[in-house]
Length: 325
Image (cartoon, rainbow, N blue to C red; front, side):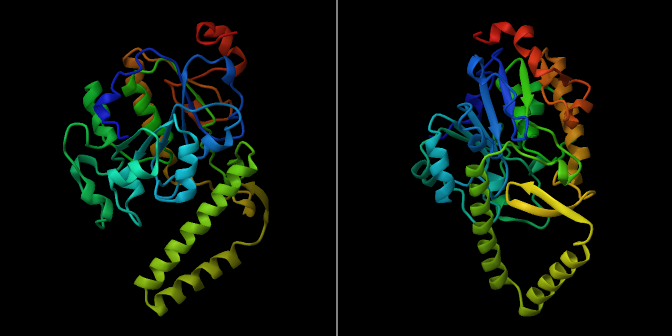
């Protein structure tokens, strides 16, 4: 069933929250004793399926999870009591159409949508399918504008490298306090982009990538000329050839990959924007008496002044009232 954005505002005032990513230190948290709630993103929900039950799953991309993909809807339905908060402007910018009644048929979860990209009602350049979902209604504007309105702040919104930024905004709007962040490392280099090991989750990612590759191939075959397709393939083969030297094998969620020691992670391109965004959102939080802690020693979030590093081993002693033992 669809949840309207206004229903979540201050709905969890002063309750503790764990924001959880899927990096290799994801499991370094006393889940069983925690009296708060858990908000996940990416494939954390499957990687940690034997560790915790997530209360919220936040997504802002057009590949995973998509309710219209049977594999993904099955995962959502296995986590029936997890509320699914997702960007419909991301999920439906390419292959699928946004249809609320259809989503209700596909998944049994409570779900909520948000816009993550059309700042101040502006369309994408070039215009995309998602632009038809632009709205200037109070709670249908971008999540960034809703955040600014709620806290009476002004800043220039920018998209960053991770959905964890959106999860933090949602957490603050919902009133969670304190907020603990674990498993969000945002590494610069690909060799450092490691995940909490889970063969089941890796298999899901491989199947998803294959499915999406077929969709893009069909789209290219339909929309590109033979010359354009040949040029794309030639450029890809040439790029792989000249970049195949001085590489070593790296474990990824898609299996072993050859990478160079200085090859950048998927976060690198927009990392500066991400760190800027975390700085802005956390400073708004601190101004409004929120406490925000990062529990990962190697995370780039430790560069953010208003997000304090806290050793997970000291978590229960410092916040013993949020834990049962």
